[in-house]
Amino acid sequence: MFKKPQFYLYALGGWVLLTNFGHTFLGIPSLLNQAADPSSDKFEAFGAMIAQTKVGYFEYNIFDLFFLGMLGITLFLGFSALVSFWVALKGNKEMLAQFSLLSLVFWGFAFLASLLFYPVDNMVVIALGAFLFSILAFWRARKET
Image 1 (cartoon, helix red, strand yellow):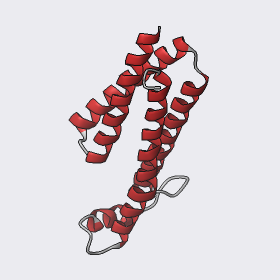
Image 2 (tube, helix red, strand yellow):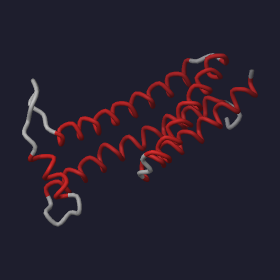
Image 3 (cartoon, one colour):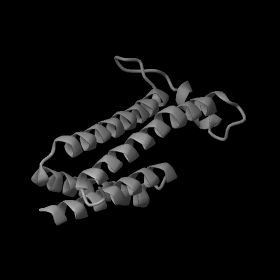
């Protein structure tokens, strides 16, 4: 079991899905609560974002754009988990090796970018965990081919 790259791709998908649930069902509601709570340290910043005049065809302000970005992260993490599960389930040895390499490179860059440019703890942890599972999947995939 531990010698198969599929195991680590399932683990990668599970990790990304778990962090997606945390981001979606804990992180987003927490930020919305902070936007509504005057005792929050982010209340004034969110208030300024909300107070901005809504513009554009869809009538949006910076607060709306911020939460659209949060939704984008949710959708990306969900898609990433689905693709990892799909490749683990359907992929042949060559596909597993190629996807593991792609995943390793992507999550490695994501980890470095999160660490260097915007070191928010949750994004660093998400990317680091995915990077580590990708390393293991790549290592096992190369051993099989």
